[in-house]
Image 1 (cartoon, one colour):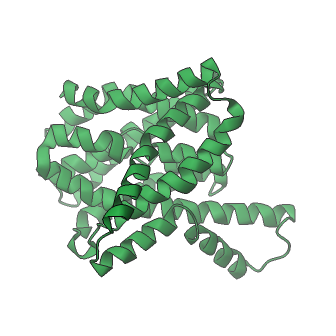
Image 2 (cartoon, rainbow, N blue to C red; image 1 turned 135 degrees about the vertical axis):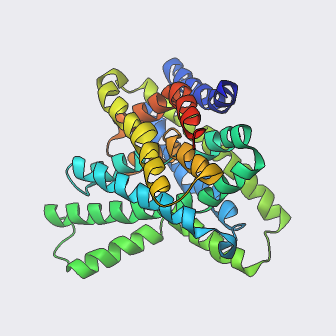
Length: 316
């Protein structure tokens, strides 16, 4: 079990260390971070999301575990926001960090090694809507928060609330995260499949998203005073890797889930913070340092928290 956790986490830690080294050596300068963030957020992420969602068949999904999983996510998300002063940019990004798991880079190899192909079926069901639900909701909420801030500062002028909400929803949908997800789902309903040339191009771009994002986390760490954020990072890590999965376990048991499905859902909730949260913090210019530290801290501490969670769920 320890070997499975280490095998899944080692590449993630390595990519972050590579980025940290590049930053410390001056190979990647602090001034390049916004450009690399745009490359990842505007090019690599849409390619990954569109290709992934174009192969999803919505009619084949089991919505009961999905519904339970995201009901718990919604509770944790709301609790973190309220503890951070409400649904503002800072609170929303921290709430996303407390609920968004690194399902691809760590989740797939870990679940595959720990639970086999049957476990991967459950995980892929969650992955198929994980980004769509969490990132789309976070985007719309962040755009609403930005619109409120602009209205309060007078930059947005006087705008009726309905118009503000409509603008935020429009900006949330016409966005480099939700838009490729929706377009991918719509294309998937055609049953046509992607032409090989397009599919290969998207595959190459999509495969670069996770390592580039993690290297970027390391680069940002090199220029950040993480020590000052360690307390906040540990608190956020505790929410993500302890409170979130334990809440999932309790709610899942109360609603009648058991066995493999419940075990995979709990371990998925216990995964470290996904690098996409870092990209959101950079794009919306809020909580950058604490989120960067939290991604690294949650990944390192997962060497302890994930084996403990695997041993716990083995009892159920």
